[in-house]
Amino acid sequence: MGKVYLIGAGPGDEELITLKAVRKLKECTAVMYDRLSGTGVLKYLNDDCKIYYCGKEPGCHYKTQDEINEMLAKLAKEGHTVGRIKGGDPYIFGRGGEEALRLIEDDIEFEVIPGITSPISVLNYGGIPVTHRKIAQSFHVFTGKSAEKLNIDWNAAAHVGGTLIFLMGFESLGVIAENLIKNGMSKDTPCGVVMRGTTAKQRKVIATLSDIKEKAVEAGLYSPCIIVVGDVVKFNDELNWYEKKPLFGRNICITRSKEQSAEMREKLIDLGAQVTEINSIKIEFTSENMCGYLDKLPEYDYIIFTSVNGVTSFFNMLVDNNYDVRNIKGVFAAIGPATEKALKERGIIPKIVAEKFVAESLFDKMKNFVKPGDKIFLPRSKQARPYLAEVLKEVGCLVDECYTYETVTGKLIDKSCFEDTDTVIFTSPSTVRNMIELVGLDSIKEKDVISIGPITGKELDKNGIKYSVSDEYTTEGVINKLLEE
Image (cartoon, rainbow, N blue to C red; front, side, top):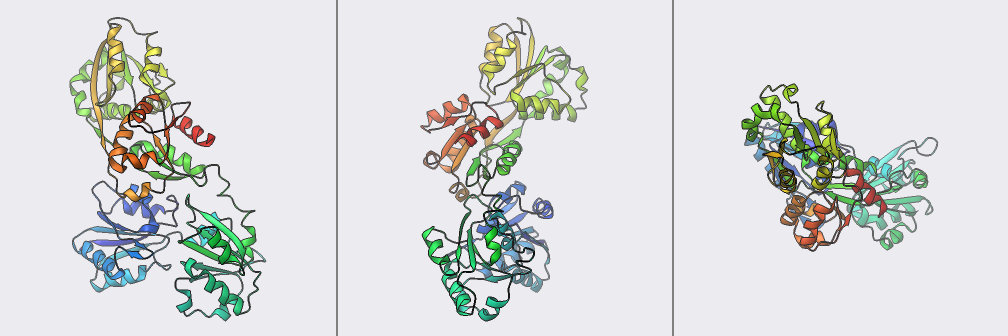
């Protein structure tokens, strides 16, 4: 018998997930996720984890709640460690209690991992504190779904004071406002609606109870939304920190491998963007190809690295073979600041560094150092351009190429995640080719596209994709280009 974790994934911002949830997701062998939890949290899963979408969308339920309950039990009985990923918190209008009770029927072990709930976090991102000294000493959360049928004591709600919050209630917005006014709440009471809070699609409408429905409909808001009523709504502009970030409202797709995406993803998020990470390339290390070169390493005059993955595969092979790096006497060279940084983290200061992330830039630097007869070791990708090896051979160098890794097409869990993106960043020709395979050429042409440099740009040109190029062929260069737009 397996075990089930009922996991709250937070309101939409992929970083609003707890450390415990991340740790347990890494242990899962099967997960079930829904629309509101999003796909960003799926990056924490192991590659062999089985993934099932069991979302419920308005008017289109992929699975009924009973079917979800039975599937949880079935997967646990098969011996899986199951993660049931839910938006917000499992026990706040998330029907997590029903799922837990079903597991108890079959004596299946479970744990609940609380999540950051949307009534607090979404309003926070909208600049609205749910409580405030001398203004709101309490808050009250209601489900707004089918509000006209709910057993809400509208008289009590209208007079309880504090902040009133309604979840899943956009379709019932008029009914909610009408009932509160009928039961004595002032029609001039501040009211706000926040749509898809904490994401790039966040939109906010501020009005009063008397005209909130009209203004929200006029603004084109739609579910999921959170409705908030009370004087704290007045802070929405003054405390509006999130919507003032420079990349707020942008959903930017990163197409790098999982290992290389973190730095760019975190910087974009800090600037207010929502990041959709599609790992279009997967790195498969073939460091064993170095076996025939280990004894020759002390003989090389230069060792050249053209990527971070090349550095990783090379030094991992040295560690696996208890090889003392001090045996290497040659000069280290690197393409670009990221590769330079990776070498420095290994205790190696490269003497030759190309500022631009292209082979031509590195050769321009190296031609001032190398001479005929120099022995050069070039550990790199199987798909690497032949240019660097060819020009070094042309000037008389003896070049040993070793393919220490290769890139293969990554796996796309849910194609729908690409639909909401507005900008796609490509960092290599292989990311272009693989994304075309994963999401389709026409889908990419609909987006704003940024290329990290001219080599990647040539692949985009070949496929008729319009794009702009960053001035500096680095992560910082790409981000600067985004900030210019």
